[in-house]
Length: 154
Image 1 (cartoon, one colour):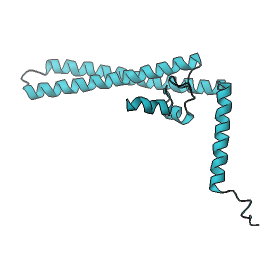
Image 2 (cartoon, helix red, strand yellow):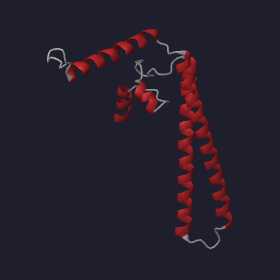
Image 3 (cartoon, one colour):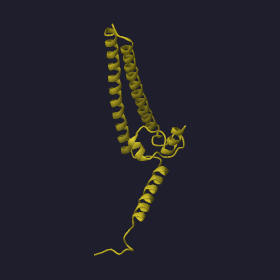
Image 4 (cartoon, helix red, strand yellow):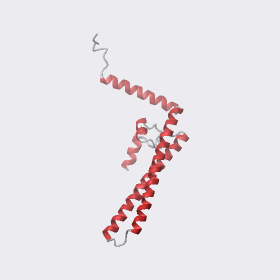
């Protein structure tokens, strides 16, 4: 049996309905200001797992730096300026990598603190909810998309 043109929803109608439902869900969540205990535990476990991964990566990077440093001390006899410069560049690159990992560890730790405080998922600047999609992509986000864009323009 064929549907009539009047009863068939259009793409625009479907999009509007989905948008309204999404807005209603966000509005209800914003009014509640809470998430379920299961959601909170799922987020906490994911953050803890990420923290452990980063800590392991950081520890390995620091061990690699120490090993490279030991090797350079015993293997630097007869190096010319180019060799010395290359070794210095590599060491600085390794240190930069370690500092980057350490910064990500700090971000995850801050996200865990915010989760415990009840402020996780809310923008630190404007107070609006951070979209779930942003938190899924970057769980330690502290700013909504708009505030992050403003910060990056500066």
